[in-house]
Every structure is written in structure tokens, then in C-alpha cells.
Length: 341
Image 1 (spheres, helix red, strand yellow):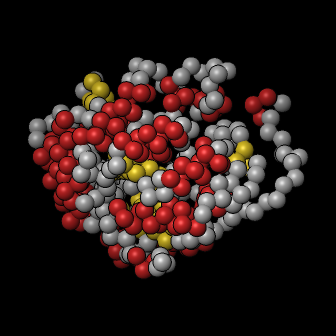
Image 2: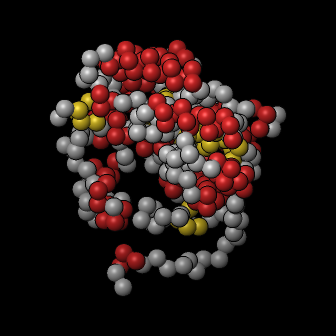
Image 3: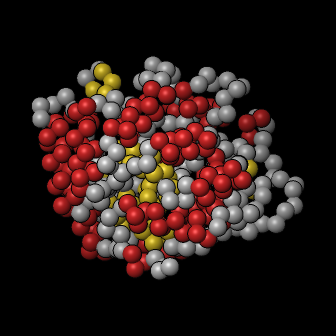
């Protein structure tokens, strides 16, 4: 047996309270449905109902960049599930060197919002983009009017910068993501590929600072879910920045007391997100957030070899995390889907 396969069932006997349905209806602010133009939404809605997911935000409204993809996505939603999906638009940074890119992109945002888009998603590839052989930083001044326009239109920007910091660190016995980088070697980076991790993250923060009138959702808790003290500093420094917990539940679930204190203190600024659509994986999120269970497994061992602990969040914090905070900053969500307090 290869030692990497060592993962014995625990002999620890403790109370178990698996959760397959969220306690409150929730909004998943970080999801991707790339086939939305032709997708049978009724099947997706049926799975959402089982989870108690009231609304899913599809961040990939323009697919690979076409108007038609966005138009058809919105038409499918409006005709078949008008109150269950919110669609964000996207921009094309690979064309930033083209003449009139800034003006054309601002006009595109305006048009997409007229069509029904409710926000803008920035992909991680766009925070590390190489265009004509040179790296484009996400705080490039040519993008500033785009951020400003989103603020003017009242739509949030969900921005994913970089990846976890260990992807940039030496792949050795001191790297907590050693196993993940072994089984997913394409995730490994260096300080020149395309820039140091901290540089990319700082550029993102510079955008938050330059545009205080625009609301930003920092995807994956800005990769600081493993350093909530630092995340707290950012929350205090950038009042226009929100967080979402997509793909970082494993970080929160190994520090239950500290994570509970953080989410309680910043209960008005963090939202539920998942990132990938696999209904059974939501069970771990619910169990971490809602229960006081101890020492239960995460669903991807290569991602997190450690065990999870429940945060046992209060009902008020859960309501805000599940739906109240998203209702505050994402326009167009049907509020009748959620309980009145």
C-alpha cells in the first residue's frame, strides 16, 4: 500500500448528527452552471429543493464570453425558473490592449445589467492574466471604470484572486497541501508563475481601496480562512468587502471556536458559497455550520486530510450567512422565498 492511501476509519465513538438539508433556505452566491443556455433547470431545482437551496447564483453568465450565452441563460431562467437563479456577467481581460477596451467593456456591463445580469464575476485567471506576453494586474487603471460602473449600477463584484498560498510554496514535507499538489500537479506555481502570491492578493486589495463605493465579494474568504486574524484586519480596513465560504469549509471546520467567534463578530459580512455543484458535498457544509459534532471527515482527502468539527453557529448568524447578507447586496432576489423575521 502506498502511504498516501493511508486513511483508516476513525475508532473514535462520538455523537453524530449528519445534516442533509440546511436549517434555513439559503442562497449559494458562488456556483457555476456553464450549460445554462440549454440546461434542464427543473432537474437542478429539484436537487436544490432537497438541500433547501432557495437561490443559486450562476457566476458564469457569459460562458466563454458571448452575448448569446448570457441572453440564452437569462431566457432559460426567466421561462423555466424565474425566481431560483441569479446570473452574473463576465468581462474579457484578454482583449484589454485593444483600442477602446475600457469604454466598450463599461458599455457591455451596462447592457448586460439591462438584460438582467445582477453582478460581475472576475475569474482567478483574470487576476493572473498574460496578455501579449505581459502580465495584467487586476488593479490596472484601465479596469478602474469597470469597478466604478458596477458601484454606480448597484451590482456587486465577486472576485477570485490567486489560489491557496501553499500552491506557491516549495513542494516538500513542510507544505500542508503536499498531497493535493502531488495528485493535482498543475496547481503548483512559483513566484514567477505569474507573480508572487502576495503580489496578486495585494493588487486585489488595492482595487477594494480604490473603489469604496463598489461592493466586492472576496471569493473563498480571500484565501485567509486559515488566518482569520488577518481576515479580520481586512474586514475592518475595507468596509465594502464581503466574504464567502466557498471551498474553504475545511479551514473553518478545523478551528471551530475561533471560526465561530469570527463569523459571529462579522456576521453581517460573510455569505454562503460552495463553488462546485455536487449536492452531497453540501452536507459537510451544513454539518460544520449547524452542529457541534466532532471529528468527522471532509469529502476530499487530498484537499484536507484533517477532520472537521461543527461550529454550532447561532440561529441569527446562520440566517445572515445563509440568506440575509446576500439579500442586502445582490439585487433581484425574490425575498418571498425567505422567512420574515
